[in-house]
Image (tube, rainbow, N blue to C red; front, side, top):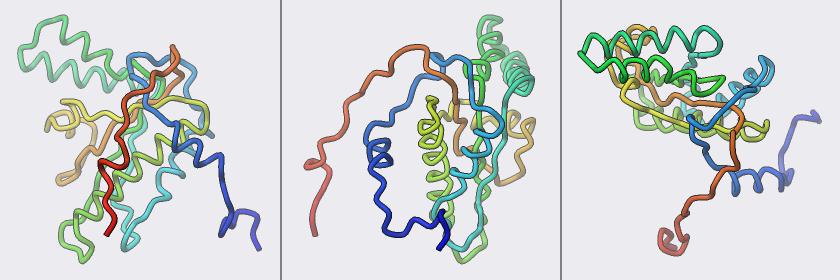
Length: 195
């Protein structure tokens, strides 16, 4: 039996991670970010999700180093073309610099397929969550965002999205500048029924 096989293998550390994971603000991140090897691990974990039909209805865009500057230039150019104030243009130029790594998770759901688009999109959402969990497991903090630029047609085109593709999220990953605060969580008895 392979060492990597995990059938019936308790993982209390994984449960602890799931019960304590929380997002950190992209504005409150700093270097270091994940190494190349760690990025590969994060992406592999991201892609290890339920995927009805084995369609892989997602892909990744990695923004690091100068790629973050280029992404910021795209946002600034769009804002400038739309007549935004100079201060807002510069704020958008620095948006991808908030964290050392940003992973764009792109939904590539197939419309004309027996697997419903909804199921494909749920799979892409699971990819985003796995990325956050993997980043946390490696000691980083993550923030899953879909701000205005995730939906802007010019930004999407400039970032290489094909027709029909959508941004499921831009996941900012780095080191937390400060201790993360807990936020209110739902009371299980208020959101759970037994059938």
